[in-house]
Length: 300
Image 1 (cartoon, rainbow, N blue to C red):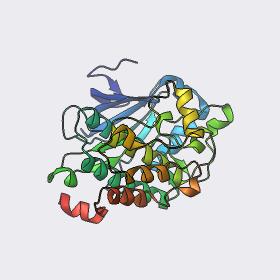
Image 2 (image 1 turned 180 degrees about the vertical axis):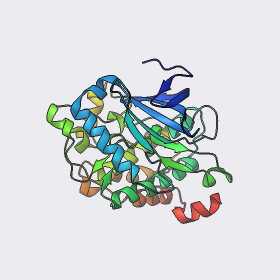
Image 3 (image 1 turned 90 degrees about the horizontal axis):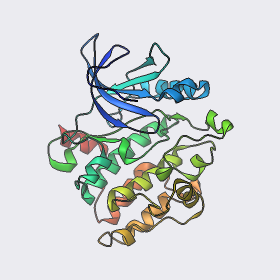
C-alpha cells in the first residue's frame, strides 16, 4: 500500500515511512490528540482480514504493553482502522543518522565494526533475558528490529532497543497459524523449531540472536548463498552452522564456536541465556562483556 506524508490513520498524521516488512509498514506519525510523536505500524490488509492472524497480532501487542525495560521498545497503543486494518504504536527512536536507526541499516551503511556489533548484541541480550524471565518469546529477533538511538561516548554509550513484538507469544504456546500450515517468521534468522511451527521457548530467540551476530560481523545472514527461501529453510533445519571466519577471515577463530553453539539444532545445546551468548562473543574477541547496569551508567 502507498502511504504519503499527511495521511491520517486512526488519529495519527503520518510524517514519513520508516520501513516496510512482511507483516506491514512502519511510519513516523504524530498523535492528533496529544501531539506525541510515535512509530506507527500498520498491519497489511490481508493479514488484518484473517481472524486467526488478527488474534495473533492483538495478543502479541498486549504482551508488549506490559514490558518495562531500558532496552525494549514497548507497545503504546493498538487498535484498528474504520475499515478493519490493525495498527499499533511504539515510541519513536531517533537514530544516530538520518538514514536509519536499525542495526541492519547501519551495517549496510558500513557503520558496524565488530566492537559496535558486540555492543548491540549485548544490549539486545539484556532485553531478551528480561522477556524470557517473564515467559515471553519475541519470535522475530533480527538486526532490522535492533534500534540504535543517539548517545554520547561512542558505541559503548549508544542506546540499543529491541523492537517489534508483533510475533511475540508466551513460552509453550503453539502459534495458532501452524494449524493452517502458515508460519510467520523471518526465514534468514529463524530457529528450526519456529520454522516447523512448534512450541517455542527462549532458546528459539537465542538461535536468532546467533544468526544476527553472524550478520552483524560478516555483513551476510547465515546461509546467504542458499539461493531461495525454501533452500534457506532447509539449511536451518538440516545443515551445520556456517563459519563466520570463512566469510570474514579477520574475525577470531573462536567466534565460529560461539555461533555454532547459538545455532545448535537442539535447543538444549544452545546457550542457557542470551547474556551467556553475548559474553561468549565478547570473550572470543578478548573483551569483557559490559553489564547492562554499567552501560546505563555510561549513557548518563
